[in-house]
Amino acid sequence: MALKERQQRLVGLAEEKGHPITPLPDATNHPDKNVSAEASQQHIGRRIVVHIAVVLLLIGIILGTLVFALPAGSRGGGDYLQSNIHVFAVHKRKMLLIAAQAATATAVTVDGYEYNGAGGLYHFAGVNYDAPSGLVPDINFVNPFTMGQCTYWADYRYHQLTGYAVTWSGNADAWAYGAANTAGWNVSSQPHLHAIIVLQAGVQGASGVGHVAVVERINPDGSVVTSNWNVRGWKVLSYETYRPGPGVSFIWHA
Image (cartoon, rainbow, N blue to C red; front, side, top):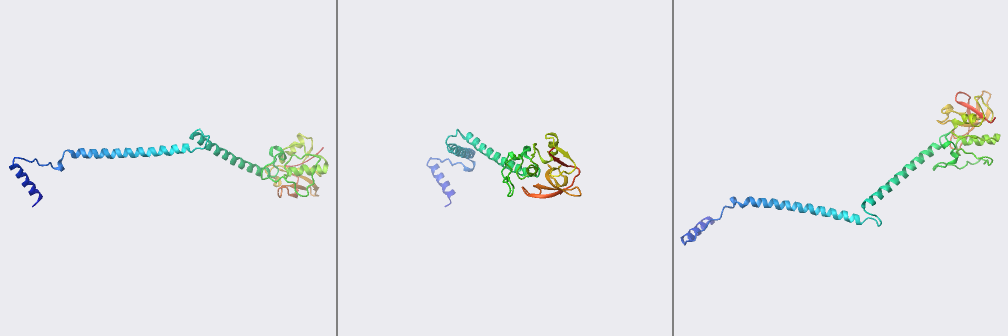
């Protein structure tokens, strides 16, 4: 017997005995259905709020752990962060200083250049200041120029030949001016034996700050044979031939 028929028979028997049965409402049309859906949505919302709260709690725990893990003596995360920033800044300054020193060391070896006019008073990392073999020390005067430069050799060699030393400072291209205006030396465009030859910047292969050398011999054609440093290498002695002309001066003690 079908379930529906049996339910109808039981209802009929109950009514015959005076006990009417009220049929159950259809669940599909139950008024509490909407209430149930709203309750479900509220439950989901509560779960989301709980999950968010748990995540925030975990974040707080992690941050708290980091704060307690700071080194002893720190007064808080801000101080620790500032300390790290300070360390980074110091490291950056050191790297910039090293780069600046390297750039200065490169500039120091440019032919004719004198740091602050008298590079022999300074020392820079990466520059070889050792006297080359065969160079006889001259203890009778103090050479203020950079060991290895053309300026050092010109002062050294001129003093060796004449007993007089350069009394001014500056790059090679400033020596003619220094000789005439601060020391009262002779300055001429004509060669003079054992004079210092001064080449201005870019003249006959000179660098951007000029070149100086000592005249060792005057040739019949008027050109001069000179002894030099730093034309063919740092502290390398070479003999070069130059000619009188524009941008060329000869200086010697009066």
